[in-house]
Length: 64
Image 1 (cartoon, rainbow, N blue to C red):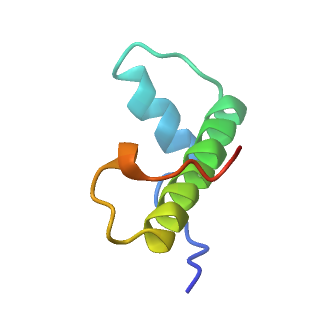
Image 2: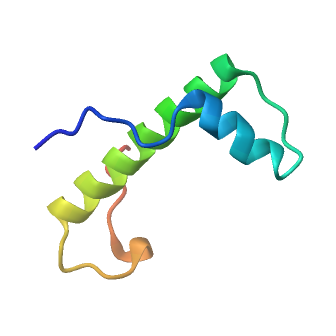
């Protein structure tokens, strides 16, 4: 099941990052969120492919 709704908008990400003195534009925040979503999907895919592995260091790297 794919969820299209994004819970953090680029404008919200700008505000969150500003609290930590990280200044980004809305466009930069959008790229950061895209990257984070891709990274999260890779993490889920790796876990689904190797559900018995509890330590990330035990999982064979999917990209060689």
